[in-house]
Length: 202
Image (cartoon, rainbow, N blue to C red; front, side, top):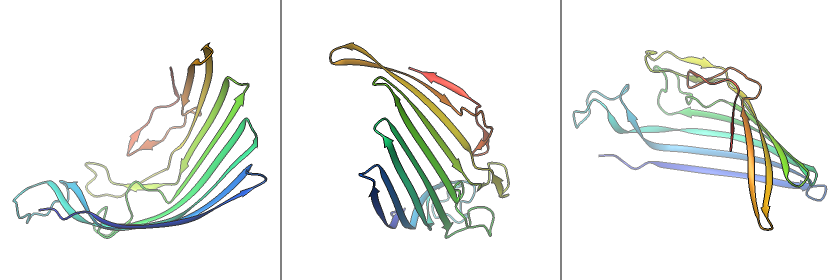
């Protein structure tokens, strides 16, 4: 009994290189119209469901997301690469998302920023720094009774060290260590507290 999902999406952008391809600047605008979607629902399931269900899959009106992304990439030397991007997203639903009078998309911040820097230290060792930051977002957790909650966006930085160990003329082993949330910032993801700094290796 479900209708198919339908959507229209358009995006366009410009890439421009400078200084013999050492610098690239990019600008992109995007527009997405979700005309009809399929969701799995319990909390807002209609009481007059023609199959007599209390929950399950159903059709729901979609929404519109539009915005712009600005990014840049610079390689001042052959061993250094830095990339950064900023995205502004304005997303609204055709039906209320929280309560009866709130239409902004849940869990989608208006502002997002990323930064990635990679540095080779000799032919075998490199280090990468990755930063993700976003603005505040809205959500309503299970048991909140339709109350709108505002969460601060995360600011999370990771560092990866990788060393290439030669075993033979054509064989190598990559040994790496990744430190997640290196600045030990506390933030919530979907309402739950995330870990502080931690590391993996392999």
